[in-house]
Amino acid sequence: MEKRRLGGSDLWITPLGVGAWAMGGGGWEFGWGDQDDQASIAAIRAALEAGWNWIDTAAVYGLGHSEEVVGRALAGVTPRPYIFTKCARSWDADGKLGHCLKREALRRECEASLRRLDVDAIDLLQLHWPDPVEDMEEGWETLVRLQEQGKIRWGGVCNFKAAQLERIGRLGPVASLQAPYSLISPEVERETLPYCKDHGVGVIVYSPMNSGLLSGRMTAERVRAMPDNDFRKKAPEFQEPRLGRNLALAELLGKIGARHGRSAGEVAIAWTLQHAAVTGAIVGLRSAGQLNGVSGAASFRLDPADLDAIRRFPA
Image (tube, rainbow, N blue to C red):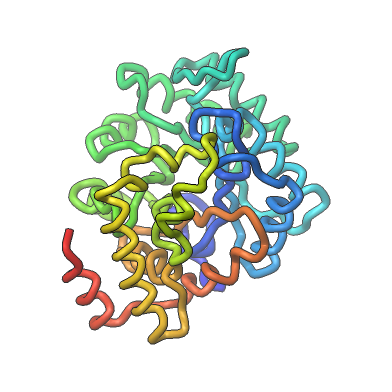
């Protein structure tokens, strides 16, 4: 499978990586509802067998549970894929989320992630959010020190804007940015993606199918039937009038995909990968069977007629 270099790092990643957000399960503010850990583990291993070579998770997903599932899935696996995780989001005994970019807090988070993942070093540790903004430099400087100490191989960030990347970049090179990017949420095209391309920052996009809305499998009935501990049930894009528009877009992607023997989800993911600044896309999985509707995006290329049809879809 094709591999692309992630920014200025020595990480060569496949176009698709396993997203482990949903694997954290329910019981926290941004959960996807209860999950089957064995199905999650099977999904990870199936993706690795298909040639994917990286997994993206975060300490906060399931309040540590996603990292634990990833660690279990990779026990005894060789060669090991790259493991990417995130810090700067913590929680208290009641599960209430907090945010901190202070040095000692990030060091503690890193050690906890190393234990849960059962690794000696994290391939890519990312600041989850630039929050609070006044501590961004301290947070980034901490990742630089962790890299020097061998705790992490590379440091990256998530959800940072171009001006914020410029600020922290003065303290040390940023290997990568993780940003939301999809046909529903293309905002990073304006400033952030051009900045990354011009400054050699690798880009990993998340939610290329916008949390399943563009998978071709979502329906209004399915949204209504979501459990209350699935954050999507109350998310704006899953509510009318946006929901109807988004499902119509997914229908268009399904028609485009049908001409090429691809799913709507593969069209949605391939659209993000065609941007010159994008290195790879995170694809959330919860079962091995879900690979069938997404794996083809790694090699699929949209033709000019496809892109024109997508451009003409009303905003």
